[in-house]
Every structure is written in C-alpha cells, then in structure tokens.
Length: 419
Ligand SMILES: O=C([O-])[C@@H](O)[C@@H](O)[C@H](O)[C@@H](O)C(=O)[O-]
Ligand SMILES: [Mg+2]
Image 1: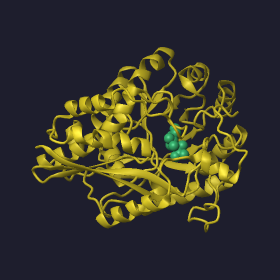
Image 2 (image 1 turned 180 degrees about the horizontal axis):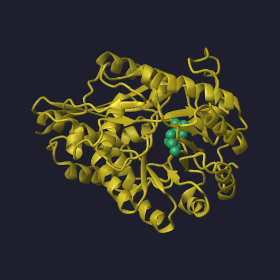
Image 3 (image 1 turned 90 degrees about the horizontal axis):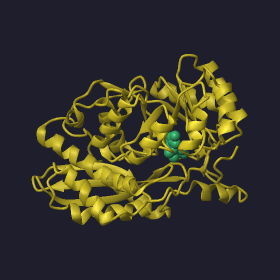
C-alpha cells in the first residue's frame, strides 16, 4: 500500500492565558494536522507542533515520503533523517529542554508514523494499540493539569475557568476540572510564583484532595539548592517532583538528596540523553511523549529502556487536540510499565476539537481505549477549515510565551533558574 499524497494543514485554536516559567500562553495555540493518503483509498491522521520552523521542516520531507509503503517505517525514518541532514530545531519557547539533531528527526517523523499506523490498523481491521503489542488496559487515566492563570486574556472577557493566582484559585480550578472530568491525580504547573507560594498551593490541594496523587512542575525555574528546600518541605506530599532544576547535572544534584522521585520532560528528551542520565541517576520518572520521541513504536522502545533501568514512566503533554489524544491513549494502553496517570492539556482546548465528536470521552478521569480500526478518530472537515482559517487570521506563527508576557510587563525576563 503506497503513499500517494500527504497534506499538512496548520491550525490555530483558542488557548487560555496559562502562566508558566517562560511567560503566558497566547490566545491561540498552534498545531499541524497531517493527512496521509494511499493508493488503496485508505487515509491516516497525525497531529504535531504548529510552529513555523517545525512546519517548514515537516513540509521539506513530504516529497521523499510519497511512494513509500505504509509498512516501511524504518525506511521512512531514514528518509526523514536524510532530508533533514543533521539540522537541529532549537527550543524556542524554553520549556522543552535541549533538542538534538537526532530528536529533530524524531519530532518530524512522529506524525507521519502515527498516520501510517492509523492506515495499517484500518487496513488490518485492528486498533493501533494492537500494532504496538496489544492493550494491557481498557482505559487510560489522565491527570488534572492545573495552571496559574489570569481570568482572561487582557482586553477580552474572562474565560470559563476564571482567575487562579493563589492557593484558593488553584483549588477552585481543581474542583472544576475534577468535577467535569473525574481525574484521580493532579499536576500543578509551577515556576510562576516564588516557591513558598507554590508550596502553599500544593498544601491547599493536599487538604482539599487528600487521596489524589500530586505533582509539581516548575520547568527548571529553581536552582538545585532551592529545589532541595522545596523537596524537603513537600516530603510525603508529592508522588514526584518534575523538572525542579535545569540540566541532567542539576537534576542529579537534587535527586541525590530529594526524598521523592524526580521526573523530567526537559533534561532527557532524546535517546542520547538516556546514558548520562542513567549514569548520574538524575531522573527516576521519565515523561514520554510520542511527538518528540519519534512516534508510537519508538515510545514503546523507550518504555522498555526505562523498565530495564528501573526508571518509572509517565506521559507529557503540550496543548493538543483529539488526534494526539487518541494516539497517546493507544500508546499508553499498550505500554505495561506506564504506571502514572498521563498529562493532558485537553480540558484547556477541548472546545475547539478537530475530530468528529462522540468518540473520545473521559470517564472517571480516564479515556476508554478505542477498539475500532486505526486510531478510531475521524477529521471534522468543517472544524478543520475553521481552525485553518484561525491560523491564517491569528497572525501567530510560533509559540512565544515570553514575548506575549512582555506586552503586559515589559520588564519580564526569561530566567532559568529564576529562584
Ligand atoms: O504549556 C505549558 O505551559 C507547559 O509548560 C508545557 O509547555 C510543558 O512542555 C509541559 O507541559 C511540561 O510538563 O513541562
Ligand atoms: Mg514538565
């Protein structure tokens, strides 16, 4: 079954003013929808980043993939690597850590792999998780991903989530999100306010939700010394502390004395980062993410590597829509050692969905694993056209949380570590 055409559509969807260590989310988040068509009339879907540099890199490999058999995924990876020729996509928004030439290939390759697995599954009459070894769970738990936020974008009406800039606001946000989705774990995005204030927010969450596992992620906003102070304060409260300090060496320094496991989606984001991290025991829980670990099959291999070295496995998320949620759910369903609830930004962006409604749902904080062939999701063509129009109109071509924050606070600087 040969690839005859690949269509890439950049889209923009509404995003609330979520605060993080690099600034604040702009009103529009970007993604690219990937459609792969074949000579047998079966098509597949993928979803990836929408930043212009990534979009252009993705466009640059398309011609080399047309004509390939949809089962020839090793060849597909090799062709992507050959076209990119060692190019490195930098971490422009400052929250993803060090991107390498190898991981640039994995990022570009990922949505094409997902789309081919979607096609393979449809052709075989099997869900994607069957192509990854079969599901070992029938639904995949996700966590409530809380953010400090403004009540709305400056100059616009307040959004449905309201303001959250203190412990009471964070607890109210958790109640709303857990009330709507039923999540059984909570992650707070930190690195926004001085650590003492974020410790207070975690304590308030613990009091309000005594049985929910809690995580805090300041995106490397703290020095190792500050990280160790926070870790001592939150001993017995967090299931893991995510990216407290920058770099593998900083995380290793914290991990040597912290009472809880450390997790990352920043200092180990490429296969070549695994060796130094294991050698220094810098990370005890790795957040996988098929968008940058080279698709679903490579993420399964990453799961095996983690198991081999006794590293726990969780899952990272950026702003995304339903094609990614479907892919994440198939992957998690087929990854036996993924023992933590996965992250998802989905509640923040679900109103602008690009797939047909009724397939993806959250039941008690978990997404039931689809058993229909392929990914199990279908593009909503009207929604795609609307979101593509948003992209053209919104004037944003690359995520820039720092630049957006500086519009309102010109003295704001991106610093890592900040405290
Ligand atoms: O969207 C955000 O603000 C997050 O901070 C995101 O960019 C991170 O990549 C991510 O969620 C994380 O866990 O670090
Ligand atoms: Mg993180």
